Image 1 (cartoon, rainbow, N blue to C red):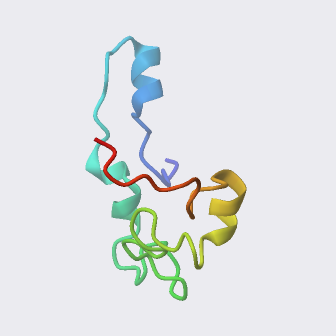
Image 2 (image 1 turned 180 degrees about the horizontal axis):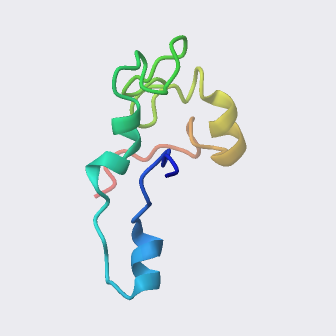
Length: 88
């Protein structure tokens, strides 16, 4: 008999084709199962998978993200107009 290299896939598309609503993906078919025992889990050793490598939120708008802010959000930084104290 033939040796099967991988188990048959039962994902969402196959479930919809069979008429089922949603079939949960079994653990043995997940990518994380396949990558067990590997050192970097498919993320690469050099540029490591970190939580917020560029900083959280709007950080770096005047520094390392300046090109993005200037291109897509012009006028985000700075002041405009005359101040009016006691505006009430």
